[in-house]
Image (cartoon, rainbow, N blue to C red):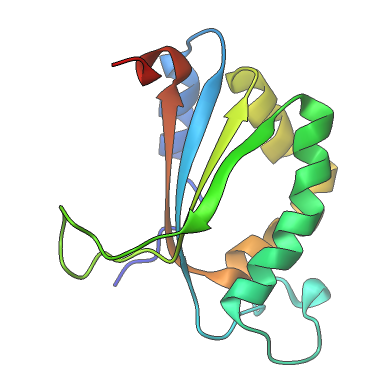
Length: 141
């Protein structure tokens, strides 16, 4: 199984070239590793075995102040139930919706020193993930 944890250069370029103005809400689907894998970020390794969920909690503690400073907000965070429509093997542990004032604030965050200092917790925590940008105006049905 291929893990989808960090965006590829091509995916980031496609996101940035799509442009758009106004708020963007990012849909995050998260599947945690049973045990966090800090091999790519040994400086962040807590020195003991922690669950992927605990590693993601460490990431959340660090990212929430960064989001607030950018004017972004956590709209929803919760546990997922079983998939109703989709591949039977595509199950998710949690969902998060984060609203950014604009796409620029998202790119500012992911390129900041503060973010790069904590993102290793996210990478260690996740077995797989999805990140889908949505247009806030599209929320009206």
